[in-house]
Image 1 (tube, helix red, strand yellow):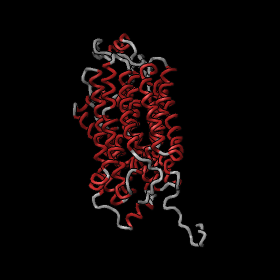
Image 2 (cartoon, one colour; image 1 turned 90 degrees about the horizontal axis):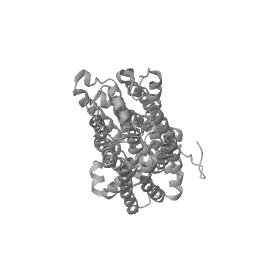
Image 3 (tube, helix red, strand yellow; image 1 turned 90 degrees about the vertical axis):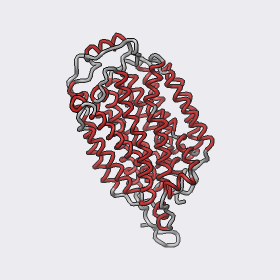
Image 4 (cartoon, one colour; image 1 turned 45 degrees about the vertical axis):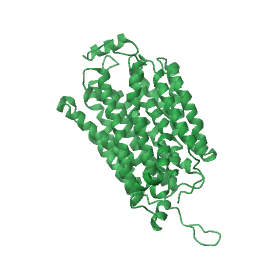
Length: 468
């Protein structure tokens, strides 16, 4: 323990920096891993195993609907976990959200399919998906608060990037595991088809593996103590009996601004992961699509079919992982930039670039591997640059006694406006364009304009006192 100039001992920080970084990083890594596992399965196996409608597009839409349903549950989770996080502390809330997410994900891995219990399987999948969304509604904000409320002076945005880094890490772990499983299982003669072993039990392994990661995450989080910001408010009697009512009554403007500030980030996030995987692995010609359907014993209607990138699953996932590496790098790079230049200025520049990026969908997202890879790198670079500063900006919009509720609600209501509908809207726009992704890109640009307006109406937050 060091001494101050007056000779008085200086207390060590409540949470060592290494513990803060690890606790904020590992939880979001697990949470995003669970979400990515579901997203990948929603494209590859859930349409056939849980929604066998007889029409490929309809089955895919039904699968995406359960994927988006979790976003509806997230604001509910944000309000519940936010209430307890602002009233009783961050630690217990973070542990509860991680447990809820882990249990829901593990149970998906043991679900019976449509062939076993009919449409009850789809209903059970939906319920567990809602459980995932409910848990993530409380997870992100708690992790962001652990990072920012324990950050050294002048480094809040830098510390705030560590919970954000869980998104690219979760993606790489989830999809890397799918690739390993795919490589170990026997392959069908037609590479466009999934192996029987993968459809029967291989897809379950990533969901079951989540339990191992949750145990590690719980061990780290149980060693945390409350941040000094929360403890000071608790000791001085500033905590609210009804933080949820307080945030809606006195901080509604920042709730709205925070929601729309996150909008373009969410849309870009799910277009770059969910939509591109769907586009990239869809057949590029009607002849290949017909042959694939016939080999799988499925009906095929050329009049309603539209083309995609024509890449193999393994090839395209590897391309995505390369892009996600840039996501991770620029998530970390964005923190020091936001600390130096401010969150608002940094995000205004990045959002303008996202609006422009929407115009690149048509010329760059194609059947050409090199061009598509450059497109993915550009998109994920922008994703990192916009996602990184959010870990500091959204918590900074609210005072300590409603910070968990306010940041969680903004973050998760935006998930409905952005992420919940993005896969469905993108699929319909892609279909309306007869296979061209141009309209999908325009959708992203319009959402970017809305985010830009919100940023222009907001104030800079980098110099606020987090103890207030």
